Each structure stands twice: as structure tokens, then as C-alpha cells.
Image (cartoon, rainbow, N blue to C red; front, side, top):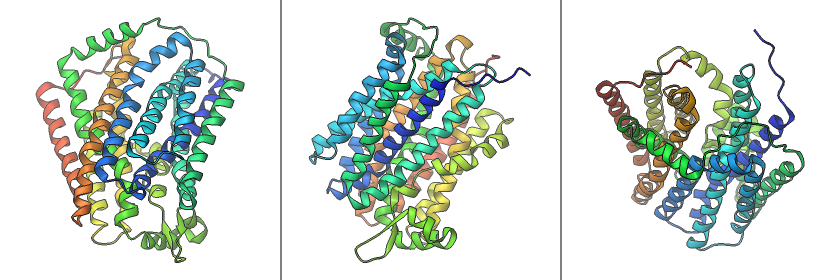
Length: 429
């Protein structure tokens, strides 16, 4: 076996930037529902903002790689920061619904521009000897930032929301400084595809009705429940569960010092878990993804993906039951959802890459962003709004039961689709 090529400095610079961006992005997003509730906005209003935010976050990356190809990664990174930084700072001063919505749209635009650039850098500076390790490191950096952001910024918002937003802005400022000082444009062969050419390519791929329908089904039955979890879990934990009981549960396992990281003391002196500090999957993925991937690496993609949906659906059930029984069941629900994510998400994205002709692998992965965009865009205006109705009626747990049923229905629909239309043929690369 050939010796593994050493990673160039830009690889580590890019991964540092990724940690900071995910810290700011998830630190703001996971606590955003709690923030809007604190300002008195309805769940339906929150859902509208979430849907528009995710529409831009996952719609823009389909095209932004074309601009990076034309103008260079470094210039487009700087453009994304120039949209990011003032938008995060504006959250400190705007309090109207229209102002918050427009500000979050600007953050979604900036995140959408940024999203493919670091992965593109990693892909450019790795080769056949180190690409698996390189993307493994990159994926872990995503989870490091995505785990630390909600914990740190959750503790800061317990003092003042302004402190949390200032921390996000500081991260963006550091990203800008690091990019200007240390990011060196990687050498690569550019495709030379114009925006019009990219749109024509997308049109050709989507003209395959079976593949287009598959993407729509993925959006509705996988990515919609997936994003509904991230849209709602922190607000649900904070609003509908006994967070003092959750803290006591954590303290019994972790001790007061570690449990304190995920909690804050109220004016009454009682420590309570902060919803956004536990309502994500990054810390679970960091620990278990390697084991889960190894356990399923030799199994067929679609049956493995469907198994992941079943596990995630079970997690939704436990999350709902936590509101009417033992609050600590929320930890089991979050863990099971994370396991479902670890089984399903990497496998379906790998599957889409492998069914593509070799020369169109990147284009097909771009199409995966369309499926994510469909699910994300629908998630806020459906389940966040439904959660508002169920919460108002005193039964917030119904939201999670409905999400579980939705996911199981998706399992059946996707199974029926693959039986009737046939699985896609994976290409020999």
C-alpha cells in the first residue's frame, strides 16, 4: 500500500474554519426557537422563519460551488463572512418579527454560500491515499463545532442573549482573520461550468423521473422528520419537560461538575438543563459513528437506510413519552434518533454518490442538497406549527408521536418505491 500523503497546511486551516462556523451556526440555530419563544412569538411564526432559513441554507449550495469554481474558494469564503457577520450582530438589536426573519434569512444565505467550500477544499487537497482519513477528520470537526456551540452559547444565553450572539459574531470574525492570513487557495483543475451550464446539468439529472421522485420522497420522509427534530427538540425540552429532573439525572451519572456544563441555576437557585445543550446529536456521533459505520458497512444501502428510519422513529416515540412519564426518557429518545441518523444519513448520501456516473458524482451529491432543502423547507411550516397547536392544547408529546408515524410511513413508502421502481444500480468506480 502506498504511503499516505501528508495533509497540506490549508487542510488544517480549512478544518479550523469549519469548527468555528459550525460552532456559530448550530449555537445560534439550536437555541433560536427558545429565543423566539422568549420574545413572545408563536410557534407558527417560528416555523415560517425556520422554513425560509433552511430553504436558503440548503438551496444555495446547489449553485454556490459554481461561483467558487469561477472566483476561487478564498474570495467566496470572504463574501460569505461579509453576509454572516453583520447578520449575527443584528440579532442583538432587532426585535420585530420581520427584522428577525430578514436577519435569519441573511444568515441562511451566508451559511448556504459557505457550506460547500470547506468540503470542496478538503476534496481538492486530498488524494487516493488520504481522502478517507481527510473526510473523517472533516466530519469530526463538523461535530466538534456542532456540539460545543450549543453548549457554550446555551450557557451564555442563560446570562444574556446578547452574549450568545456576540460569541457567534466573534467566531465569524476569527474565521475572516484566519482566511485572510492563512488560507491559501488550493491548486485545482476548474470545471469551467457557468451558472447557466450548472442549471442545465441539474435539469438533465432531474429529467430522470425515477431519480427525481426518489429525491422528493427522501425530502418528505427522511429530511423533513430529520429537520423537525432539530427545529423542535431544544424548545420542547426547555418548555415541556421537567428540566430540573433532567439535571438531577445527569448529575447522578456525570457528577455536579460535568452536569453543570449542560445547565444553569435559576433565580430560585435550582439548576436546570438548558434545552439546546442536550438536544442535538453531535456529541453522540463523535463517540459512536465509527462503530455504527463498521457494523453496517457490508450491508446493502437501502435496507440499512430503512433500518435507520425505524430506529429514529423509535427515538421520536420515547421523546414524546418523556413528557407524560419520566423526563429522563428524553435522553434515550435523543440517543436513538442519533443512532438512526448515524445509520441512515451517511449511507443514503454515499448511495447517491455511488449510483452516479463517475464523472457526475459531484453533481449527484448536489442533488442531495435539493432533497435536504425540500425536507427542511417543509419542516418548519408543518411540524413547528403543529407543535404550537399541540403545546397549546397541553399535549406537546403528540408532535413526536406524529413524527414517529410519519417516519414509519416513509419507511413503507420508500420500501414500496424500491420494490416497484427497483433500486438504482451502483456504479463500479
